[in-house]
Length: 262
Image 1: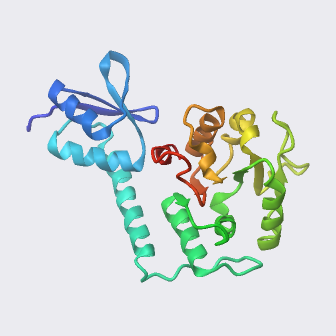
Image 2: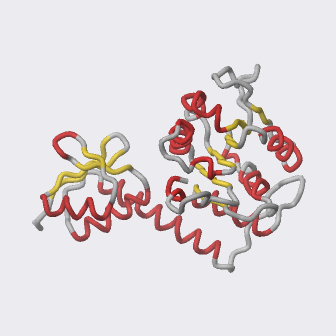
Image 3: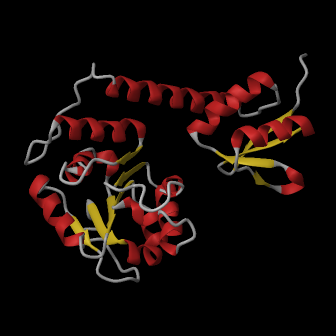
């Protein structure tokens, strides 16, 4: 039996690693921000990207992995997703049509398809190029519903009008209060698209993170400050959603480092 350098196990949505000291040092260097759990065990999130990097790391430092089949599957999903996105942006692929009242442009369809395949995207098109229409394209895929749009305080009604213009069949609701209230209709169904502003997000994070499948952060530079209440709320909702889209013509607002928070 070949030598192993430690053990990796899946624990409540995180990968926990216990390894020999020199391997632990290398692990921290490669994975960057590593949480420290009980007895000094290192933890990283169970994301597809982390899974792929972890498989690569285990090639160099073999360890016991009880959940190896699951890990390999997550790594394969990440590889497959990147290949699909590379195919999209190569120019060889014609993005699908989206059933909207107004036909979207090709680059809007392409960006929407990247969101649907890759599950996250920051769209930094210039002002006037139709980032809103790109986001609305994604709402035609039932996997994204219920969807949440977070925007500036004066823009929810404008978003509602744009959605009604492009996709009148979608049911929208603009959140009116900072504190949660019942969103379900009398028939027990939720709106297709819920629209709110950044100031109301913190009070609604528990409710929205429980059912939202996709989230669009309009003017995403609002999330450039990591320690703010709206940033924490946005992070929680984004982690719970299956699809995440950021829209901003100015994603780098003041200092270059803020782009990492966004």
